[in-house]
Image 1 (spheres, helix red, strand yellow):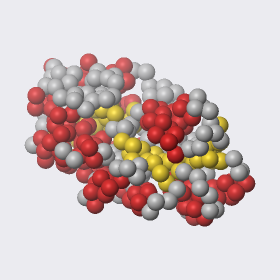
Image 2 (cartoon, rainbow, N blue to C red):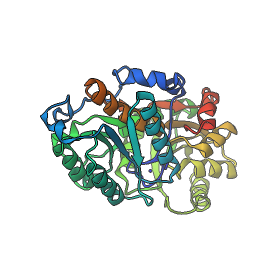
Image 3 (spheres, helix red, strand yellow):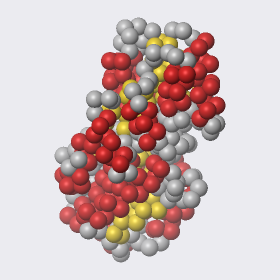
Image 4 (tube, rainbow, N blue to C red):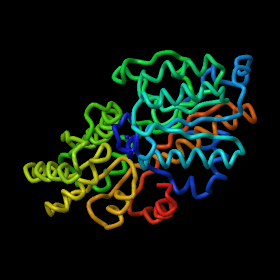
Length: 357
């Protein structure tokens, strides 16, 4: 979601982030990642996606496609920018395409069109089992595949994906459960010793948010905190969401902190906390301009976990470029590791200024 895929309907589809410490070396540092130096993910590519073999003969082009989820969404604009930057850095042709209207069907259509051109490789957003057929079609055609932003293989994601030709592909993106734990661990410093932390879920049907919540609870509960979940409608206007959160906070005096699982959640929560004149810290997944401004103002929003969409597509394209040019096996990279607080917010300002966060 936009922020979660960035925030958009989250299947992991929007979120944002980009660690300055990684980008600061600009793209030069990214090149090292291709050698695995920044690979904090778990696996390598599947055997079917490994070094060049006879099947690669089917792919007659040196073009790499990166298929996004929604054309004009801010989160996906960053994905497109990252893919383009990788192409320029590594001297390969990278074509980023995304449907005008967000949908899996739109992505599948673009993938089919890309496969018809016989590209070298494609980076795909594996939102759910809908993407299984396109991935297998690419692999069967000898086209290399790297997954990015989402690798939703769970049964809750349209049915379980169990084919190892897919589940062992390199993945560049955020480990959602782990990122929840990372966010919660960092949030402890802002919380009093006991109390209830409110978790705001704008898209309860999105399993990616469930994974984030489970990660948050895996840290908060052992630390002695209770949690309560407030479901809001992420498709409503933010003003309406803010009103719902404010009403809840006024009616529940034991809330000592708020975690937004995805946008819109934490931003309305931060404004609700301020409107209710409460001294409650707020944390969020995903970084965007509004989130940055709220943190910069010194208000309730104290922490954000940046998913770094720019790096997701950059590293995915890099994986394919390095395999094409040098035979390197693609590596998995967990981009959801950058915690933003007041202590490092100034460094994020440069990324925001350059449109990379």
